[in-house]
Length: 124
Image (tube, rainbow, N blue to C red; front, side, top):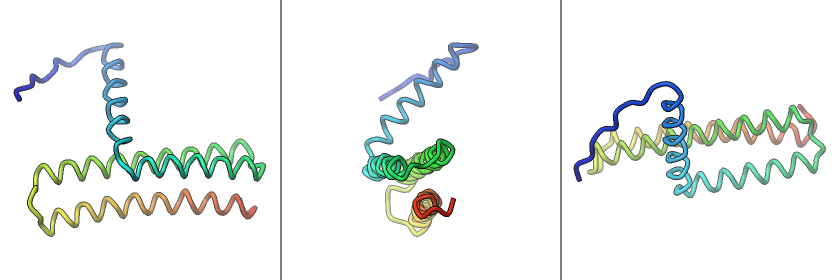
């Protein structure tokens, strides 16, 4: 499979290309069970905030934290894809790379979940 590298576009067309690449990344990310679960958690958390009567600012902060979770999940998925490509056989280095990516996602989830819990108990 021989694919040519596309010629870089300039100006507005560069932004159009970048948007297309981002949408392709989103489509790829949605193939991941973890990302779909994180989106479900975002929706559930949003419903909890609405039921709690959270302020618009609190909802916006939660949405931003959930976007951060998905961004870190996307980076973790990219890391896993590249690790599998570079090191298809099992190696301790590949395991460490994947474990560290997983940790990054888990820490980001803890921050978002912690914020949601704090809002729900009235601490924020």
